[in-house]
Amino acid sequence: MLQPSPAAPGMPLDEVDTPALVLDLDAFEANLDLMAALAAQDGIKLRPHAKTHKSPVVARLQMIRGTVGQCVQKVGEAEVLAWGGVGDILVSNEIIDPRKLARLAALTSIAQVALCTDSAEGVDRIAAASSAAGVRLTVLVEIDVRSGRCGVAPGPEATALARRIAASPHLTFGGLHAYHGSAQHQRTPDQRRASITAAAAATAAVVEDLRQAGLDCAIVGGAGTGTFALEAASGVYTELQVGSYAFMDADYARNQEAPPFRQALFVLATAISTRPGFAVLDACHKAVAVDSGPPLVFERPGATCVGLSDEHANIALSGDAAPIRLGERVLLVPGHCDPTVDRFDWYVGCRKGRVECLWPFAARWREGARNLTTRRESNRQGETGLSILDGRVALITGAAGGIGRSLVEAFREADARVVACDLSAAGLAEVEAAQREAFDLTDPAACHAALARIEEGIGLPDIVVSNAGGSRADTLDQVDDEVWAREIDANLTSARNVTAPLLPAMRARGGGVFVFIASVNGLAHFGNPAYSAAKAGLIAYSRAIATECGPFGIRSNAVCPGTVRTPAWAQRIERSPAILERIGRLYPLGRIVEPAEVAQAALFLAGPAASAITGVALPVDAGLTAGNLPFIAEIRP
Image (cartoon, rainbow, N blue to C red; front, side, top):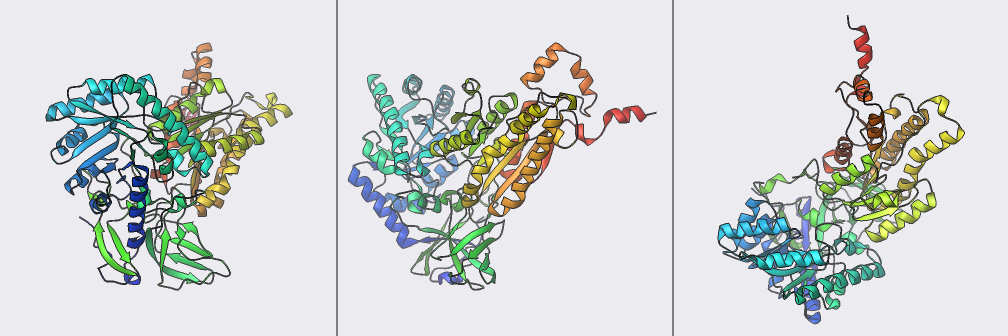
């Protein structure tokens, strides 16, 4: 059931119960009108994305302005919109679960339904569901235009997939889905133009290949609020599948030459504690998404959100800022509108300071057997593992090594857009990632240059996993000045080189996560003295970030592996097979650690399930640091 509504029609805005999601109806309607006019001017169809609003009411208001239908990401969203009278729905996502495909097939009795695929197996699963239901589902091929998420590579593979769809008696080939998500928030117009020019060229080549194969694309869809004018002008796209334009948010406002829409969506909060130069509001993580930075304080010059927690937003007021009174209502502009909407049950529609309407969130996080009211908390538990990273950018160093490759695989499976970094370009060539960067972490200038390329190419990282390092000196006798400097540089200085330059931007954004792959050698002495000193320093550095950057929404933790079965250890085992048995006696679990186990620990600490964990050093060591097993064996009677 829905939570009680926070307001009633006719109520003044300053009487609305908080926190509440407020929609400025004048700005909202102006945004709908403007996008409809711009699409008509360019002669292109408009299919807004309902993942932003999750409401049949908003969908109907868009449709009366001439849109051809709606996009959704989830089957549950498609169901709610169809039940609410939306007659043309595209699931711009891959659906592979047979039960969900059966639900989509059932919807064809009341709406036109299409969905995307990027694999032959996906085509076959959709065909099986269509056959079982006795219907023909329309299927689009999703191509990856360097967004780094779903999609088949443009070229022969895409053409083969389209032919497979067209050849099925149970399916209809519907065209292409070519959305460049990461381009939406590239800050400069030149960056966005370059990205969409490349995406349009790749898409046009596929369209031509399909034409020569006798396949027409009824839909060539994509575009977002940050780039829609470029797709519309390309002559390649037939539909704009924009979403955020209806509401807008602080992250889009950070773009140079920002989209021409008004801020319409706000979180209304109440000042519950005040003192000179400072106020605390009753809304934060549970009411405002901060994945794209902290909320802005609307039309309050000199007021800045500086501290975020589950229930509170701390607002600092500069010397010339007007004070915020106890009990005063304050409007916050969310950093990211889509997940902010997902935290509420009601839109409170206001015009000129008074409540005009209340609309429920009929499609809020509805999927499978979930109840609508199960998603109040801000930390998302994943369907496919410990956490879902939902397209967040994860920078991983040492990505070509044994632990590094497991990290890349784990984070990709959790839906992160991975930037793989390593000294070895040849090693990176074998790693699948959204972006690859080969550079020397011990060179500060090289790190700054690589980070600039990463931010330009895919955006500011949300997560940094500092994994690069290693040791070759087992005992003090093997450590001279050169060895000491080399191992400190490789294991400690290099980690700072790639993380410290990111801290100012993460502070300004209001969030970020660091995971440092340290070692049990940083907790106790197990040999490798220079390496141990570096790893102990790495744990201290991680805790410094956790302590001093925590007020800005930044978390930092360390994973401390014991002996890990990496390729280097495989070679040692090959030379001396008995070494595993000898080492096993030291570990309570009787074995060493697998790279995937280190990766899963890092994924947990990086994900939303660990949202309250910061400053820890987590041993992943098969029990090595739990106690001294050989000692117990020696004293046992």
